[in-house]
Image (cartoon, rainbow, N blue to C red):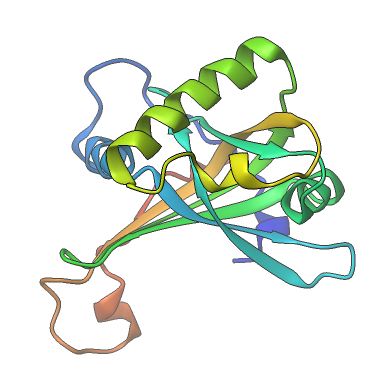
Length: 176
């Protein structure tokens, strides 16, 4: 389904007791806070970039970027985006389709930067996150409000047709 045709609103259950399907996706995203953010430029050409993200209890995602990056320009031009997170060992992928809104306030930037720096310190021996090493304008954040989340677990699947491979996809899309 094309991103432009996604008009449904994402409405997860708020609180600590999530339904099982939502809990599995939430736990996976919390344990894997790095993904590929896909955007499009004004010509419609795709662009993908690896990002750290912060996940909130209501499934809202936050990313940190700089105002002089292609990612920033693309999100300002077209806020529809997809974040893909993958883990090789269990062969699990989660795709988050959503709409990004810039949230440039220093409180939000500090909150997201703190979370990302903490994750980077745990996951990397390379020092600071890659974004810090770019001379590309001022820091800003984007909040991604999910429209749809899909999870596929391939590890237990035998070879089969399209429907067989994707039967484990879980969607949070809700009817209008």
